Image 1 (cartoon, rainbow, N blue to C red):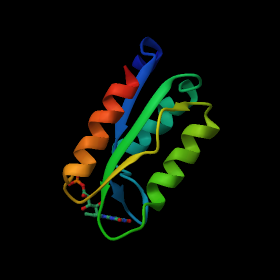
Image 2: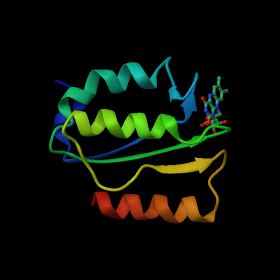
Image 3: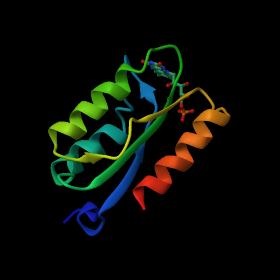
Image 4: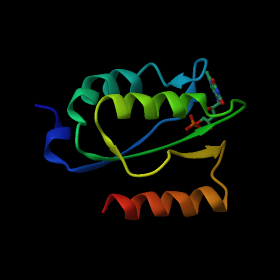
Amino acid sequence: MSKVAEYDAIAFGCPAMGAEVLEEGEFDPMFTEVEGSLSGKKIGLFGSYGWGDGQWMRDWEDRCNTAGANLIMDGVMANNAPDDDAITECKGLGKALC
Ligand SMILES: Cc1cc2nc3c(=O)[nH]c(=O)nc-3n(C[C@H](O)[C@H](O)[C@H](O)COP(=O)(O)O)c2cc1C
């Protein structure tokens, strides 16, 4: 049984990679394995990106919604390194998961 079953609330973080996709070597295989177990759980997403417009995050949110997850807020996106706003949003995400 996956560890996911032990938790009611989980934050996942992953940057945009490839062409507007989740990192494909480790993160996407892990997420694909657990997404079927996210129904009803409080889920928060965060990640950084470079030159895109956030498509990877919208697609990721769609996957969570399709899985029946309870997305607590829009995914927090940081352009490369998090600025003060992104740090504040991350703190809000952490609080919302509690
Ligand atoms: C191989 C590769 C692919 C990337 N693909 C995208 C992309 O499709 N869209 C985007 O906005 N940024 C893309 N980026 C930029 C990264 O998302 C950005 O640099 C991010 O902050 C990296 O996070 P990390 O330092 O945690 O790995 C890519 C970067 C690399 C190295």
